[in-house]
Image 1 (cartoon, rainbow, N blue to C red):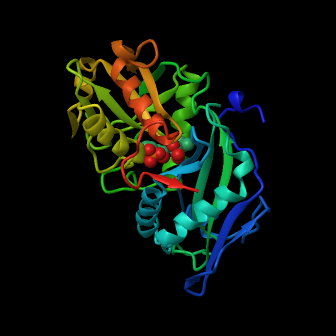
Image 2: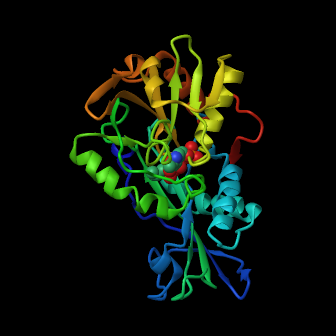
Length: 335
Ligand code: PLP
Ligand code: COI
């Protein structure tokens, strides 16, 4: 494997984890070498998009351990996603155990320390049983696939250009705060349009008023003020990013910075100096420019790659993940 040149795409590995739900219970689950799935043509996932997913990574640390970052947080978020979609919950302890089994079975695909690549784990759940009237399925599958990945954005760490989208990602009281597959299906036209127009990603605004900043299709925002305060949007329709929660802790407890989670008006974005997209896949990707209907907002601190604060956040987060910096209790799950 050419670890240093991996992109963010699917490569089949040796084993996936599968558990099926039928007659009101999850089976004991097992690893499988089979990378394809056979389901009813009328499965809930195919007809009514009844599915949710998670994303987390496994790393090789400096001292040669394989670790996963905060899998308990993914387990908890998936529980919320499942409940909102009327999918039976996969127990949190079993989720963490399944992640552990999947990584162990694919240890050969965990990229070496310092390669810049990671093993991406994609837990997902879907309605596998048939439904024709609009209703939750009676049967489900929980599955975890593992695939080695490089940087999410093509070209590695470089400053991204975003466009303020006229499309909405999530309605108030909708599904924006859970990781439902349907949120991503409806963002596809917006991202293809953004790419066609030369942008890397969309900045979505709140659907009700189109005045406040929400997130992108696959990551939350972090901004840095002129006086080094880390500011991030508060909204009930964005995905609660585990990376963002971790970065806010790092900013406060490791870097001694002030942090603020609050509504951010689009109009005040010009006053920030650094902007980053944060997420498992994105890690922290610097944003150089945001284009609002022809008007360019330049993020001066992140116009040429990472800025001073985003760089410190990035170095500390990845340092914790790779075992160079002591982690807060419970963040690192040794495989
Ligand atoms: N927002 C969206 C819409 C996402 O898909 C993701 C990715 O998981 C994130 C934010 C970042 O979340 P996390 O840091 O938990 O990966
Ligand atoms: C992740 O960061 O894990 C995600 O699920 C985002 C997705 C757009 C790749």
